[in-house]
Image 1 (cartoon, helix red, strand yellow):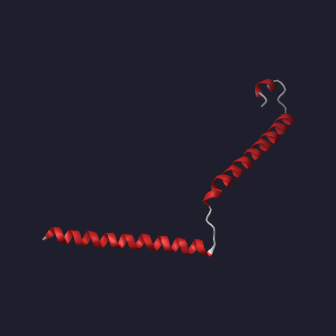
Image 2 (image 1 turned 135 degrees about the vertical axis):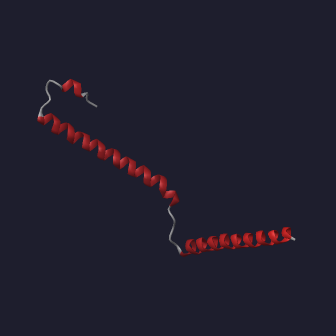
Image 3 (image 1 turned 90 degrees about the vertical axis):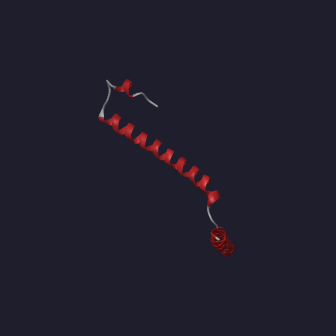
Length: 84
């Protein structure tokens, strides 16, 4: 990177336009690198949209719901048992 203090005496409009253009190029390159690394990191977590994946998700959700309902019933029965 160039030091702006070196150009204090020769600071012209053309230089500022050139510098702005170069900085925009650097920013766009950095954005491209960041986007590529983000896609690479999150590609592992993307869900496949196959029918088997949908059914598997439904099965897991139903199993969680069933376990929750069973737990609630057990807690109610234990409360009744200890109230007597």
